[in-house]
Length: 156
Image (cartoon, rainbow, N blue to C red; front, top):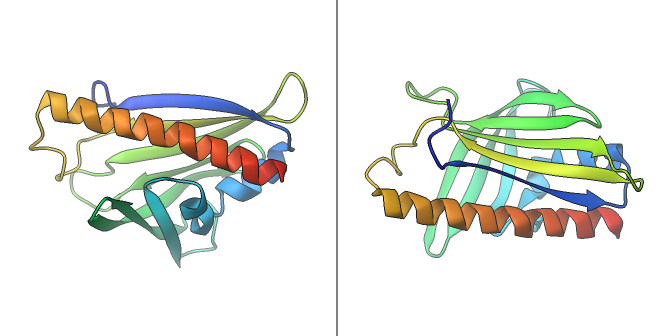
């Protein structure tokens, strides 16, 4: 179940094959190259990029830095790559990140990024509705920036 107001998806068309785009987004160690919030990731278990593999994602907003354990839940080459955060927490998983690829009408790939807060993480639970809305706005803007950077990388 999605937390009200804490879900967003956005898409971009990329002049590259679905496999080339999948290869980029499924390498979470590179996400820090594109995301304004994520600064990288380290694989921690399983075969990197496969369903069930785990990684630690590293993030920064201003002076605040944190890392979060993640598990890959979908790994379908050319179609979908997805993970959830803190799957082992009693109230988790908290957030699901999804990247869907589909052939674009004009050739290339339509890449859709989906952010879905399944349950409020403990760090967000004390926030007011206005603060949560502001956080959602920051994430939405970051998603657009991330997709633009992935597009640039795929098309270079």
